[in-house]
Length: 248
Image (tube, rainbow, N blue to C red; front, side, top):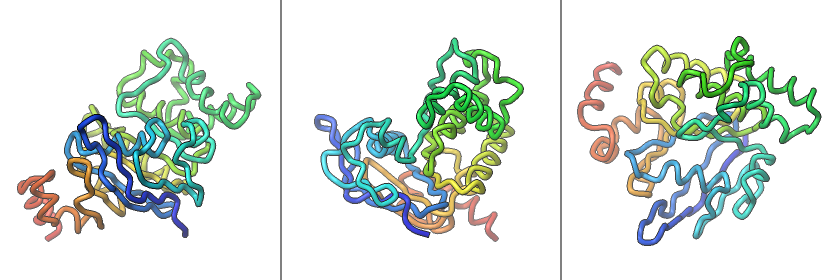
């Protein structure tokens, strides 16, 4: 398979803050890649650059063979990249179905078609029983599911998930991991930002680690948890020792 996303020498500065510094990595089609690192490492800023919410100062972003730097967010979405947000942003007064239809309208403005596509996405994430509820009445995990459904309704080829497991309890995290697995089996390319390492280890085949806006490591999950620089900057020795024990 070819490369779905290629990031080359991506940089972004906000005043005196270097949020992202010459970051490069690539994601192959149908791969799940995790972007991890401590708070303030540049992960969400990278997502905002990829999806057109910010414009990089320097660097290139190629998605499915096309340079997308300079495109507006909805044009990037139309090119096949969809995202969720670190803080769920549903239209609270609107129903689950109406929320997801807003994503489906990207591909087809006909109400009946958009409704059908929205219902398919809602069923896929397990929210069919709640499609008539106002989004503001959903639990945290169901708001995460709604975010995913709205993104799926745009018919993406690449899905960027920004901390979809934040605030979830262990059982809910297991449900979210299973859902990400289903998305991968569907053929989607996934880039996921997450702090829950057991979830990352379960879903990602490749990991990129950022710290202070720079890439400090890249490799398989096993390589990352054994990397001394990653242990110092992010994981801590306790996690590394536990992972080594599990591996044995």
